[in-house]
Length: 288
Image 1 (spheres, one colour):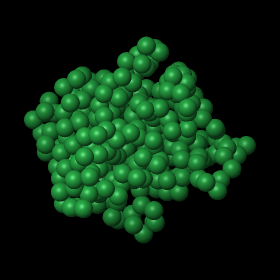
Image 2 (tube, helix red, strand yellow):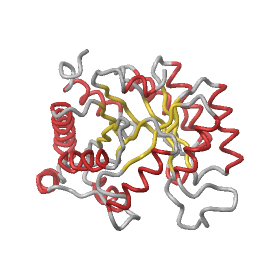
Image 3 (cartoon, one colour):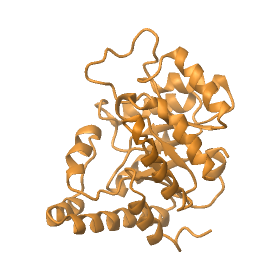
Image 4 (tube, helix red, strand yellow):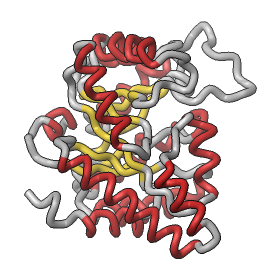
């Protein structure tokens, strides 16, 4: 099934993200994660490339495993990890495996890499255009409610987003955020720029304090005072921090749904137990 059809169904959707193994011999563990999250019956599951595209060869493999569990898969595809020629082969491989949905991204640029090479796309919008020209895929792309960390002005970032959407995107998925008001303001701004495709809200359950510095360094995400207070209070108590992080993410999702945001994507960090607790907290709220 194409994700655009799921998102345009009119019902509340909750999806999940996982990442493939860093080493091939860890594939069995990731398959267990796939089965664990699939049992929660998310509306779809996405599988990333991993940092710098280093695990891209396993993306189609895991996406196929997801679909064997009866869940629609969304395969990530990045400019960083693939040349233009390789993109064509990957699209062919995905089609052969009946993967209909792609999240087109630039990807994180490795520090020791000269990007782009002559054979690579520089921007995600160029990748979107090639996938659209190839045909047959539902195409998603990323958006940044707080602005991309490499873009100085938010309005410029929305301009780049509009170009990406005009290249052929069917839906957008947001980077994580911890203040829902930031998302609401972002949704108004992109509507004003003529962006009308579905937007999926990305939620990261922060269940250990060690994640915070990494999140902020990579994404530029702001932490609201209320969230900082939770971390300050429970950082030294792992069990309490995990419970508080799940509660905070749950409350974010409930507020989003109450305010008309009908699509939520949980960044699970390959932890089915955390996804399960959140889904259980939402059981009556997301019931058809």
